[in-house]
Length: 421
Ligand SMILES: Cc1cc2nc3c(=O)[nH]c(=O)nc-3n(C[C@H](O)[C@H](O)[C@H](O)COP(=O)(O)OP(=O)(O)OC[C@H]3O[C@@H](n4cnc5c(N)ncnc54)[C@H](O)[C@@H]3O)c2cc1C
Image 1: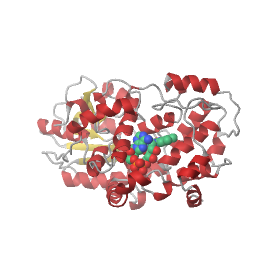
Image 2: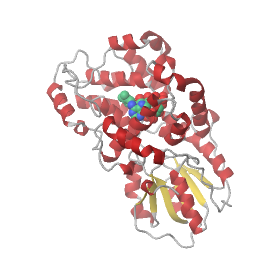
Image 3: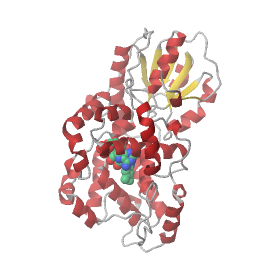
Image 4: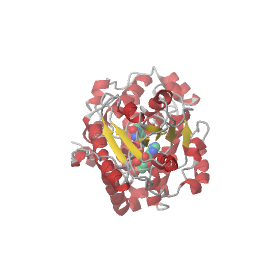
């Protein structure tokens, strides 16, 4: 049974009698396996003697929509349609407005994902009152359910012991849910180009490659971007093509360093998205960071660039330009250089709020894994969130600073710059 901490009922409607199915709406956990939301839908459907219809949508006019993200989602839809047919689910993929309302008309109840961000938060606030059927949300994003933490955590050191205490309960495989009543209606074909890059098949392949070639050297090489030793799973995690639970079980105990990122840092970000203030202003920062940044906001800058100059990778700094080129070309930046990318935007923007605006816009617009709880927690980390005060200096105040000389000392800057040319 799906743990009750994962499930919330957001309205008091009664199940529709004479309904044809239970509807599962995959908003962010876009997968059929390792999905607590779908498992919950199967439990409800079995008790009502109904099949399950899985619906996955693509809103073409959403903020930051672009072909790169659409193609990633379509790759997932192709895999999901095939897997749904295998397991006995109905499956619909649609980019039509109103599709959800039409499908809800024949549904006994709806189950969807609990997710503290981008679009999903607004949908889950608006739709329960409108659909006229029970509206359940289920947390399948985090290993330890978000509901286990009732307030905003201050930093990794405050959430870490709490997560570690609860991991033995929640770090357990979730069997693929199979509905008792198989879907008997027509099965759709999703026409998506095989080279889209996204999807369940590609995610599992990436995980297998990571386990075979990179996990053992993660602790040593994950901070050297040219080594390509990290998992590169963040886009698949973002679109829900793979669950962090599956990844954590697959790497189990082999790399505490990797688990620190995948579990502690990631779930700290979800905690911030769920309980923290609006991440789009500096008011979201802890007091010490707000105060020190306010004191240094008017400091003279050695360089000052516009949004457009940043976007075009047109600064004086070869490493920074290379990171921005990686973002434009591949939709990712290696995690270590991503910190440098953020810190330099702070250093070279006319004000701190303008720096935050530029970072949010560029990351959400171009990063495959953008628009994610990790996006906002990490961008604000560059301004001091979840961090501690360091030595005071111009522009940054006591917020941690990074420089090119340090990057050259610790990483192969020239080799990376050459790769990005
Ligand atoms: C300015 C800035 C912006 C960022 N924006 C995003 C973003 O939009 N989306 C995103 O997923 N991550 C973001 N990160 C965090 C991190 O850089 C990426 O998660 C990581 O680089 C993804 O590559 P990977 O999958 O190879 O990571 P790995 O090193 O293989 O880590 C495995 C997984 O752990 C999680 N993880 C790793 N680092 C962090 C971290 N610092 N905080 C929280 N979770 C982490 C991710 O889910 C990642 O896929 C950002 C970091 C910075 C400094």
